[in-house]
Length: 453
Image (tube, rainbow, N blue to C red; front, side, top):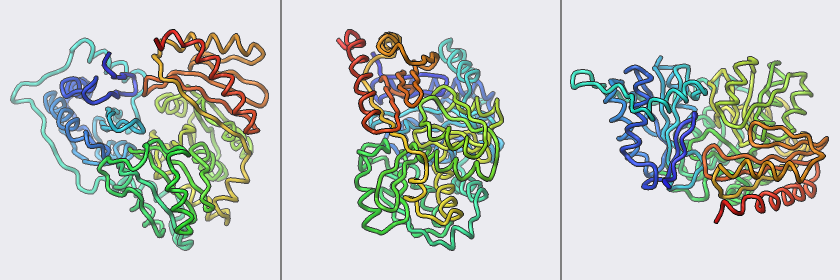
């Protein structure tokens, strides 16, 4: 079976095994049909397969009468900013985010610069499945316009969120690991605008990853060493399309993706009161921070589109996901590593503290994540097995299964972007979190065994 995952949020697949020029052009033409031949921002991350996908995308959009605003290599949040900046009908980011190098994908944006919601995503899938594309004749084809310096509008928006001069006076030294992703196009520029001395790792956006692209602890050993070597105040690691960020503190300690959102929230919610939204797989530390600042706290299903929909419905001032994705509506309804960097540096500045001391001041939990390569059809079986194994827990259905106790939780769900089942557990003590996920993994592995044969 072709390795291709189509959802309301877009498309991901393996090049040559599910994601090919023909299907890509059809997807883009379906998108052009929704946008009725309007302006469409097209950008890509640095993956080596990007140019092939980009040409196929442009063909589909031109064939449905759209004007393509070619932004070249850009971050995913930059694409969202550009849609609003140019009053475009929508946008399309070519990226597979943190997936391995053989993957690529397509992430559409709505006219307001946000990721597609369920309604738009379903409309796109319906057009694609029914072959109802609005192909134009020779006189109705679109055109391509290249954008000059597409990163600057995004950088300007992020700089407007913080006291730039106060941060500049601190003269922070920061190690930024772009890992040859699109973050290299604007991450160093943002940090330099904030007066930082920047050491860049993987600063050429050519997609030749120097380590596994997901910014988890086991993949960021070189960043931890570089922070110590350069006596840096912080280390930031972006994923390939720079919508997510993990953090290394000034002691060279990986403090992770979960604390990216927690630190940003601790800074923002103290100054801007209002609802705060995270997904159902995000650490409880975010709930504690919301309570500390007297703000409403909400959870959504996992997935950027679900978080953004909930943020809109409650008029949230901030949101995000525990995978290192901070969403600030003032910049756009999309995860944004540039926003994360700015808020972390601003928080260190205002609190007059080091990153390590700030992180240690937050409530402590251990969150452990694992996964099993398995078809999504196995998830209901895994959920039922976990429900029976832990009858004393409060069960919450809807996004796989989440089991809650008074001080810990475990969740099993299908990934939205890969053919895997994710298992996540959290507890105040590391040993308890490890024990819980070990128990859950054994239950799930036993339950889904027949699906793996």
